[in-house]
Image (cartoon, rainbow, N blue to C red; front, side, top):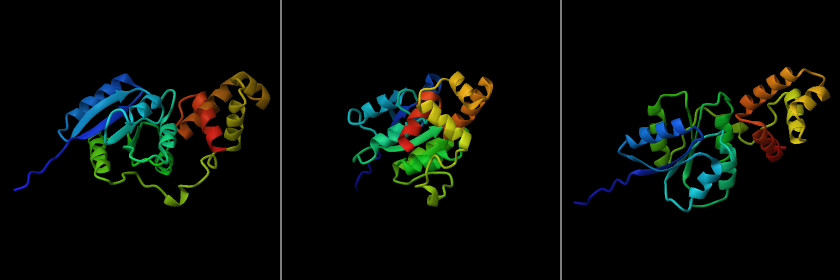
Length: 206
């Protein structure tokens, strides 16, 4: 009679929030089929893990310091023998699953869902399946800037030119508070966390 070997699935976590990072590790370690091999707080450190520490599934945030989730996925494009990646985020941006899929992610899970859903997603992805909310595949190659308003596009151009909020307000003839309001909406819409990420997003997609 042959013995069946069931090796635990190795998971590496990239999450900027230390409390959530610890909570995720505790959650996953509580499942006998999963094994947390490493936890890091930014995308660059996650990329360094690949090739140094063997693991099957990478669980990454979308908004991370130094290198965000989109940057991680772009860096892994074209590489062979890389772990399957799941984007795990609390962003309300409904377009993020499409963006993550287009960039090569194997799965997407929201922090707004029950923890059990995340575990199920990891197990499914490790088994070779893709797990996403409904995504219109016809839009996978769509211009990521196409959904922005004219004002939002102008803000991105201004940010990429190094203008401060005050300079943008003066140039656009609007108040400083209005600029801050538009920027916050822009960041939320694109699933970005700050000005540097917005500039990088624009330069990568223009």
